[in-house]
Image 1 (spheres, helix red, strand yellow):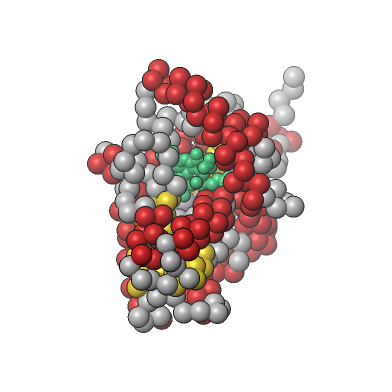
Image 2 (spheres, rainbow, N blue to C red; image 1 turned 90 degrees about the vertical axis):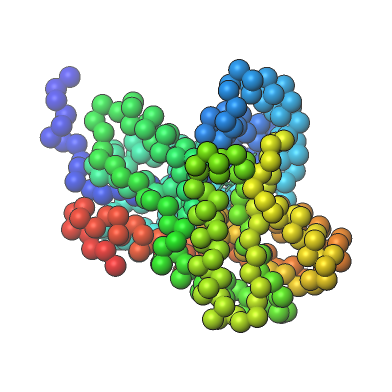
Length: 340
Ligand SMILES: C=CC1=C(C)c2cc3[nH]c(cc4nc(cc5[nH]c(cc1n2)c(C)c5CCC(=O)O)C(CCC(=O)O)=C4C)c(C)c3C=C
Ligand SMILES: [Fe+2]
Ligand SMILES: [Fe+2]
C-alpha cells in the first residue's frame, strides 16, 4: 500500500460531547444489553468481578430489565430515548454556535453511538485535535473517569491518534451557576403556584465512595450552596435543600434520599415543592420517570399538593451559552479559537 498521509484530511478541531448512555429501545432485551455493559463497568460497581458477575447475571439482569423497560416506555419519544435525543440536540446547537471553529459530535459511554466510533469519525473528518467533554458537572469515578477510561481504550486501538484533551468538571464554574440561576428562576417564575421549597436532587452514589476520596458528594454540595446563594437574592424566602436519588443495590448510598425528603416534607406540612436536577445535563429516565412520575406519587400520597419537576438545562439557551463558554475556554489556543 502506498503511503496515504498526504491525502488525509487534517488540521481541524473536534468536540465530542459524551453522556452516560441509554438503551436502543424501551424493551427488556435492549435494556438488558445496556445494563449488562453499564453494570459490568468496574468504575460503576466496585465489587470484585468474581463476586459481582454471578449476582449481575443471576439476579439483576433477570429481573431489572423488565422493570426498567417499563420506566423507559413511559418517557420514550418519537426521537427515541430522551437522553439521546437531547444530547443530539445539544451537539447540533453547539455546532451552530461554534460554526467553522470546530466540528461537533456526540457519543455515549455505554451503548450507542460509542465513543470509539465517533472519535474515529471525527478523526476521519480531519480533526487531529479533539476535546472530549463528559457532560457531568460534578466529577465522579463512575461517570467522568469512566468516560476517560473508555476514551483511553479507544485511543489504544488507533495507529494515528488525534491529540486529545478532556473538559474538567464544572460544578462551581461561574458559567454553570449563572446558567442554573437564570434557568431555575425563569422556570419557577412561570409556574402557576409559588413553591415553598426548591429541592436540588442529584444522582446518588454509594456512600463509601465519599470516604474513598471521590469528590462527587462535595461537588454536589458546592453546586447547591453556590446556587442557593444566588437564588437567595432572586427568590427570597424560597428554602433550598439537597438530596440524592436513584439508589441502586444494597449498600448505603448518599443521603438524604430524594424520596425520603419528599415523603417527610409532605408529612411535615410542606404543600408545594419544585425539584431541579442540576447534575443531569439532559432530561432522562431518572428525571422524567423517577422524579416526575414516581416522586410525584410519593409526595402526593404523603399529603403534598403541588410538585413541579423543572426541566434540565437541555439544549435551551442558558445551558448552550454555558457549554459554548466552557468549550471555547478549552479550545482557546487550538487553531486561534478565542475564549469568551
Ligand atoms: C449524573 C451522574 C450519574 C452518576 C453519578 C451515576 C451513578 C450511578 N448510576 C448507577 C446505576 C444506574 N443509573 C441509571 C441511569 C442513569 N444514571 C445517570 C447518571 C449518573 N449515574 C443517567 C443520566 C441515567 C439515565 C440513563 C437514561 O437512559 O435515561 C440506571 C438505568 C436506569 C435504571 O435501570 O434504573 C442504573 C441502573 C450506579 C450503580 C451509579 C454509581 C455507582
Ligand atoms: Fe446512574
Ligand atoms: Fe432510577
